[in-house]
Length: 197
Image (cartoon, rainbow, N blue to C red):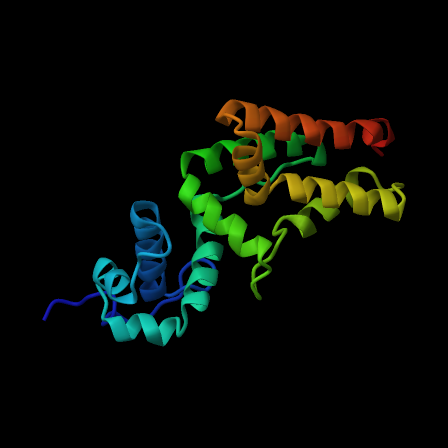
């Protein structure tokens, strides 16, 4: 018998995901792009991942568990962020994120809808802690309410939900979405540029 992902020893991958889980999540992400979220059965995921259907159920007992894990996996693997060296580089980071969402819209929708529904375990703003550190280091005298407003605005702009809103509600093109998000981030940061310490 040839070893498959299910019979190989489990070694944690990046983000505490085993090789089997990685195969399952990657298979589900591929199938979402091909078929959407509704038409994908655990059997189809198992076949694509090269594991048994019971293995999928052992790792993700419900469809919600699988969707949650897949959204987190997509955000970290498909839409990774380049960490800015400065808070003032955030407009460029946000521009790049909007462009990457546009290249894989089905997956961007999964990430956005999962975080917008507030499914337990999904971090609505995964870059928040780093953004707060950058602001603390670069603009140390910023008042707490101002700091909170800036962090809230930038983390909201740097999200799949923003891309979905611009795309669905405004029918904006890829370039227009990237421009609008980057411009909004610049507008948030402009009032505090002179206070860089």
